[in-house]
Length: 270
Image (cartoon, rainbow, N blue to C red; front, side, top):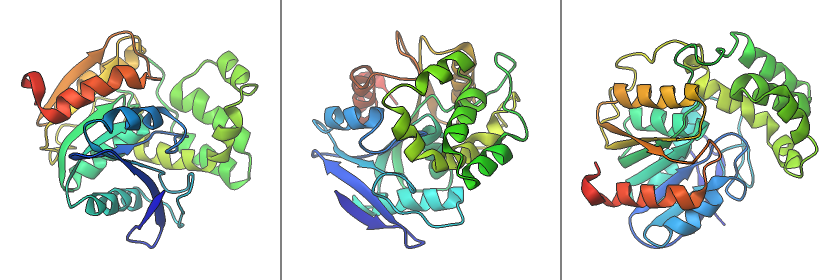
């Protein structure tokens, strides 16, 4: 484990593996560098790249500094980019994709940007996230009701049916979800404006001029597939890719070859 100090003094923990052009992996909700798809992805990409797999603030071995803001998480990625020499490829998954997108929009030196299933809701193919969702989530976290916060996030943020959320409570991973439950507020804050069922705003990410890959699973729900097509359509320099047979819980073995092809620029990829 290595650490870098972000602009506000927060220590950000990361693992560095492999050799080659640097790639920074940005995890989604509940993910740490040792829990989630980026753990397996990092070992596969390390055959071709220098991979930075980090704990977002408030998780794993990273610190946290109140009050939270999306800007602080952007600064965390900036600190990591500086560690690897001043520029890097960046991959983000789920809410981490939205964070990576925001980072690129703020002018950081990102060579290529890859995004997998940012959880935007852009039409009526699923119910929009309620307007008071973020506020209720903050209240649950503030009162220490971690399990309730996880349930609310899963039900209204992710859209998982109630019966499956109940079953999840009896799975070994539930304790890991509870351990970082306070950070779901961070994830919700990043995506809240784009989960109301409205089309993505033209020009919102006009500064994201780096070649961008927007990927989605072929077995993911319609609302997610619609959102990723819409995102690719509004970005200045993006292409859309469907990973057949994959869902939001994407398999690293299916995702890694696609990222390698994109970052290396093979087969005419952007």
